View 1 (cartoon, rainbow, N blue to C red):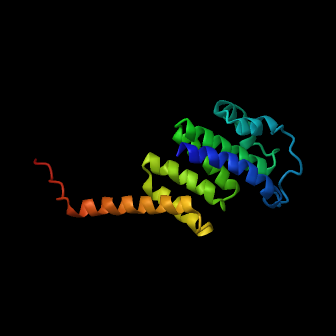
View 2: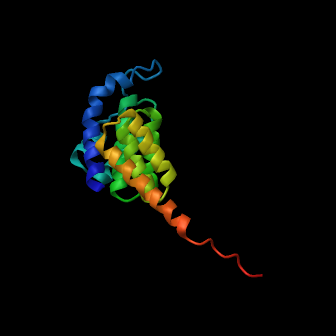
View 3: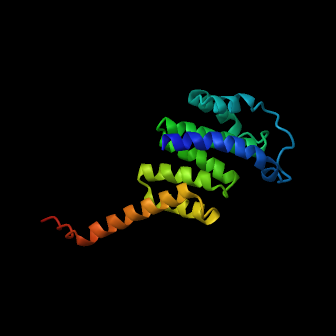
Length: 170
């Protein structure tokens, strides 16, 4: 999982550059970034998680930063938190990224992996399912969805053969 999240962050940073114009079509989006985004994105390229966490956070909620840059910063910091096993903070950053663009199967998959790790299977399966609706051919999402569905099925099968718990005696 560590490798996939790191690879995702680097891949996302470069792929989002091409989608930049499509994301910033909202008339309320600022025309130009007034905040220097270069240090954040340099930290992403360098793979420096501590710098990503320290620097990119100021971009995420800043309305003066272009939408595409806020999306890149949130997903990069989420991946950095995930690599540091700070699951709740990573999920919060993926939540922020998905508020900007809910059509990203890679973000839904990354958040789903973290939710599954945390034990929140219902939300994880929903994220994997939503990602599959967007990109049915995404092998990583398909594998995660299948594995979690099988895990849930096994849990249900175990519950059906176990005797019910006895009520405490009074």
